[in-house]
Amino acid sequence: MPFADIKGHDLQIGMLQSDLRSQALAGAYLFSGQEGLGKFLAATTFAKAINCLDSEGDACGVCVSCRKIDKREHPDVHLLEPQEGSDALKVEDVRQLQRKVSLRPYEARKNVVLIREAHCLTAEAANALLKTLEEPPEHAVFILTSSKQALLFKTVISRCRIIRFAPLARQALEEIMENDFGIEQPRAHFLGYFSEGRIGYALALRESDLLREKNRIIDEFALSPAGSADTVKEKEDLRVILNVLATWFRDIYMVKTGLPHSELINLDRRDELIGFINRYAWTALDSIMNTISESLFYLERNVNTKLLLLNVRAQICQR
Image (cartoon, rainbow, N blue to C red; front, top):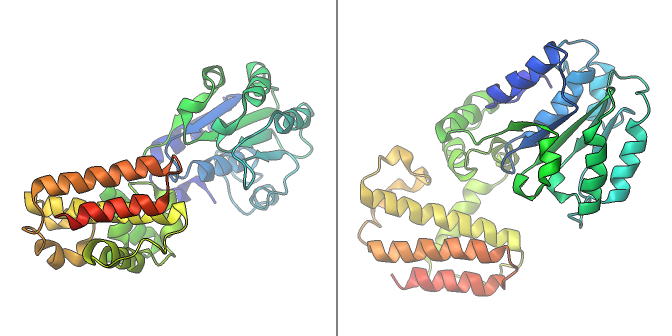
């Protein structure tokens, strides 16, 4: 995959290509920004571009080096990421990488180390990494990605060239979904809003049944007083429900203010939303939105999911 296939981050890609073409690569990079923006895709493409055999300042995607990196089989490109069931990157893993990059690359121009979600480094691992970042080998490049830069050691950050990734504007993301990925307009419109400008998240959802699922959630939990919370078992399920409900009540709020209908998230249910103008008072909408927001906050602190959803339903039914 060449850089041109990474959509919506032209400024960031331009900075990386400038470094490649001027042969002024930093010893370490930090790709920071929210989850789902495409940071790791950009980092992988950058790793391919550094060692591509056929393109200068880009990744061809088809040479032996690029294909090996795609398959995670390249002997000089090393990946460190949290393992399933764990959110820690340990010092032993960092030391193993250090031993590998201390040697000259077998077949590439540079050893490249990709550290995914670098904020997961333990204190010991971060300190061990710092020693290498302070004097990185000339034949190595470290690429760290993180969705929570505030959790990274400042000393580690200070040793990196920071490339900040930002969410796309809703309309720009919607157009990319339609024009570049062939997604029909209603789905592209909803994904543009629901993913909050995170193109990686939108692409992950594009093959899902989210459009039908979000309508089921609205029918069951926002419109039906008899909806049940008993079927919600997983935290991620509740997160989706709360986010969908937030879009619904946000839309009602916006309809009451006279917002252009093109700005509605649930544009496919515009007529129903118009019918809700007088159903909820401003104060009721404020209470519901506050409750949903608080529930998302408490969800991260492992509060009982059933109780959270029952509390939200109680607020909705008090209209």
